[in-house]
Image (tube, rainbow, N blue to C red):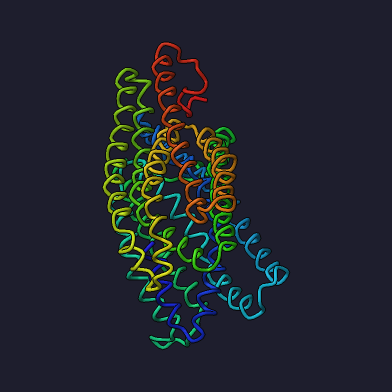
Length: 443
């Protein structure tokens, strides 16, 4: 998130800053909606590598990573072509020509970062799953300094280069992602040396069974990314109908909520890794593995819900303070205050939801989270929010109450699903032929 803030600050000081900010925002909306579908499609790496690592099968971990490269080869042209097609369609949606031109300059540079971004995400999932996270942390923190430096060089024309304007932000992002990818390649090389493994071309030969497993886990996550994005977009469109003041208040609370959500999101990665590792050990230690799966999920829940309980109290207890960090408009601050109270409640549901979903992902189940989140959000949250926003006096608060109801209900449903899955996992100790809970690698 801080990388986006750095970009926004640097772009905002360009000449014609309103145009530059608009072009950057529009370009990011198009590009990241597409590229994150491919990134979420790589979720199978974490599940399979974590399970293989838990079973002490290090060569299989490497084999999964090598096979995932085929998804990157297919995903890269898909992202590039779809982005360019979306760009070409902008004039048909009434976007002004000057904004289309600036967005095109930005995206034509940003697209070159696709391959390093996808490679970074694949390596990150691999290293997380084998308990090597130091370089990941270093890459994320230091990337802000690298981004700031190259934004300064490319956007404004320093170090002997001509000013590139908005395109410079895209090229700076390319440099940052190459840097982050290089760091993780270093961590990957150290891991191979420590594990006495070698990367050979034979590992990249397509294996239909492994590709099927990766795809079976990845595609529900990719589609869920689209449905989540669609729901967020729908909320913003509805807010636009309520007026600019309420739309601004909505955006302020949305940004604050996203910042608070980063901790549960980080815990979701470790939940996938720890649950997957514990589950992978069930062939050699079946009784201990079931207990370890439960302990891994419970540890994440204690940390996540404990954090979010404190964060929600602070969030809902001082709404005007947080909203005042974004704007000095008293009308926007007043409109944002009750939404912060609602958001403080829904954060509990969101945290429980993401952690239970991640625990299920560690077992190889991404379809249940996808179905639960999509159905509850669109069949309950969206209609309820619409009715409360336009058929009551609640307005923006009603829209967020619909979102809160969906978040809390989804968290409760996923808690029940997790309990049922644990019971099934216990029974699977005496019935190893159960397909749903058999280690994915044995299929």
